[in-house]
Structure formats: C-alpha cells, structure tokens
Image 1 (cartoon, helix red, strand yellow):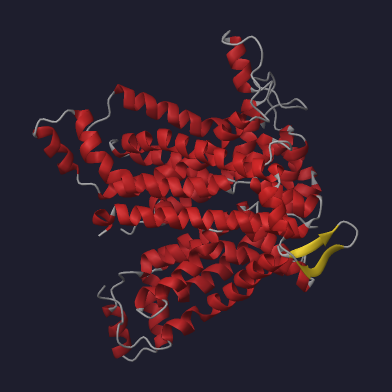
Image 2 (tube, rainbow over the protein chains, first blue to last red):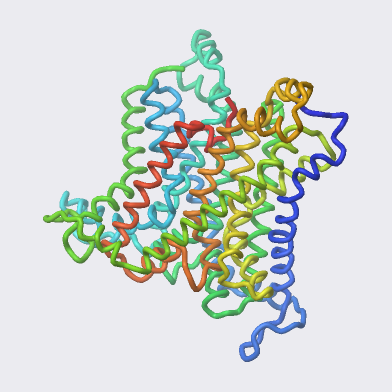
Length: 290
Length: 264
C-alpha cells in the first residue's frame, strides 16, 4: 500500500493506539484472566468462593452428563441454525445480486436492517407468532391444516426458527461480500460454452462464493453457540444452552467458579472452531484470497 | 448477472416475509385496545403508547440507555480514531496482532464478557456504577467504531496532508482541517453504529447493569415473566427509532458499507 509509512514508523503508531490499548489491557485482558483464575477456585455451598485452587469444576462440567447434554444441545442448535442459514441465506443473496436498483437496495435494507434492531424485540415478535394462541397456530387452525395447536414455544424447533431469523443476515452479508467480487462475464462464458444454467452454477458460481458461505457459517455457528436471549426466552427454563446455563450458575445458584468454568469452556470451543475453520478455509481457498 | 426467474422472485418474497413478520406483528400488537396480546384484534387505540410515559421504570431505563450509549459511542470513537490512523498509516511489528486485539470483543461470546466484567467490577467494588458500565460498553463498541474508521482511513491520499504540513500547518491543524474532513463519514457512521450497538446490548449488560437497568435488560426481565401489549409498544418505538437511525446511516455512509465493511 502506497500510503503506508514503512520507514519512519517508530513509536508513533504505539502512541496513537496507546489509549485504546491501555483500556483494552485493563478492562478486557485483566477481567478475562481473572475469570480464568476464578474457574479454578473452590466453591462451597456454605462459604461461597474460596481462595484455594482445584480442577474439580472442570472435571464436574466435563464428566457430568447434565452439562454434557447442555453442551450437546448447544452444538446441535448451532449446527441446525447454520444449516438453515446456508439453505435460506445463500439462495436469497444470489436472488438479491441479480436484482436491479432500486429494488436491490430496498430488499437489502429489509434483509440487513433487522441486525440493528434489538434481539429482545425480534425475539418478542417470535414469541407472539409462535405461541399456542399465537398468529401462526391460529392461521394453521383457521386453514384446517391442524386441529390442535402445534407446540412451538419452549421447543427446540421454535428456538431454531427464531435464531435463524436473528442470524441469517450475517450469512447474507458474508456471501454478498464475495458475490460483489464475482465477474459476471465468467458466468456468461460458461453459458456460451454450452453449459446448462445448473452446471454453470455448480462449476462456476458455487466454487467462487464458497469462501463467503464458509466465513458466514463460521460467524453464524459461533454466534448461535453463544446465543443467550433467544434460547432463554423461546426455549424457556428447561431447554438450557451453554450461555443460559452459565447465566444461571452466576445469577441463580451463585456458584461463580462453576459459571466461570462453563464460560471458559465456551470461549475455548468458540476460538478453536473459529480459528480452526478460518485456517482450513484459508488453506483450501488460498488461490481465491490471493 | 442474469435475471431472476419466477421461482427466484417467489423465494425472495417468502424470505422477506420471514424477515419482516416478527417485526410487523410486534407493531400490530402494540395498537390493541385490550389488556392482553391478541391478533387479530377488533379495536385499535394508542393507550399502550400512553402507558409507556406513565411507567417510570421503562422511562428511567430508556434515559439510562440513552446516556450510556452517548458516552460509550463518543469515548469509543475518540479511542478508535487514533488507533485506526496508526493501523492504516504505519507498518510496524505487531500491527496485525494489535488489530486482532481491538476487534476481539466481536469474537468473544457476550456471556463470557459479561461474566468477566462482573467478576472484575465486583472485585473492585464498582458493581452498579454508571461509569463502570460505560467502560464495559466502550469495549463492546470500539471494534465497530474502529472498523468503520479503518475503512475510510485505509488508502487515504496523504498528499493533501503533506501539502498542508509543507505550507506550515502544525500536525494537529493538518489533522483537524485536512485529514478529519476526509474521513468524516467513516467516523460519524462509526459513532451512530456504536450508539446503536451500545443501546441494544443485552447479554453482556445483564450481568453488570444492576440495580439501575438499561432498557434492553428491563424489557428482557419483563418478557421473561409475561408478555403484555406494553412491551410491544416499547418495542414499536424502538423499531421506529432504529429505522430512522438506519436511514441516517444509509444516507451518510451506505448501509452495505456499515454492515459489510467494503470500501468504496
């Protein structure tokens, strides 16, 4: 990059970023290290958090089938939401890319806009839609598709639907970014050489947008694995996921060391998955990123 | 690129319905004249919007959220701007690591941040303090402010600044009169986006925002108990407010650039 000063950097960049860096070290790094330390503390029901260290919290979370089921449920939820986001988001982005202005801008605004609206508000909408006397059930019964209300609130199906709605804009954003770099001429070249539209899609378009789909999937997976508000409100008390379990340990049973352990494991799982998949994607699609 | 066929347009219509449905339902429900949530309803009224003003808890939480978002967005942008200039202009050892560190709050689950801040603040005895809450929100919004400032500062033509310096302007004057106007949109867009992120933040804040709660936390606590038309009318106000800010952002920087982060 021509605008970069290669020769006379010196201390200037560090002085410029010093305020933000100090704040981040003091208010991000230190609290995270403290949380890691907290997760090794002993918790006693009568005396609370003790100053002695132990591995018991980790052993408990890893071996207890109760926490196993919570982590398993969270992983299943994240997989289902990611899959749905790919199935819905990728075709939608391709349709959007083929639109003409101003329709394209309007539709893009409708699809991406909800990202800026509070998750609480969007989840409230799904609670009203999915409830036993909700809009969806009333409509289904009025159309005589079902005679009894289908139970959607407090089920995994309901959580998956609502969380897909919350996160699918991230998939659209990610695929949109790669589609913008795509040269439409290549698609025409494939067609003019006698390939069917499907073949052009599979052999020309798909390989080029795959990095976008992959990075979108990483974002959606990471965000759904750590989602809190939607599983808590639509899933209810019984369908616990990792984030709500950590919340309950912290603010319900007040077992802070155990809550910290769950948080540390969630963070580690997140980092491993995000970095692992990004590395994999970079190696696999090196020719596209270069 | 090719045109959309009928199936493509049908898919688009269904997708947009899926996206808009929950928001439209919330807005419709807010206009009921009944004391409970029902759709379709017979009588429309504004009684639940008037009820917002009578509810001290909601009004108090709203103003706390506004103050918090104003402070967090302003400090966030003020810290992100010099950092963005450093990253955009200089190539120095640790540049990538520094960028990654500043963007990391976007990658760390909000629950983990909430727990970490709660532990930290309770050790310091600062739980429930407004300024401590502001500091945690600065951490949350700084990545967004930084990303937008970066997108306008990277690839900026430096000749104008050099001209100003060679004409005798001080470094600060050159920054204020030449550089800042050129990256104005990215900085202002970053501020609006930071404001929205701070105002809407729930998962981290729920750990640290006691006893005086922010609006999202107050609404979450309410919805977790029961849903009544009041939360729908508050949500409607929030939706309308966000749409207005969104249009401002779209005019200012372009919404695709704010969200997708591409440089034009």
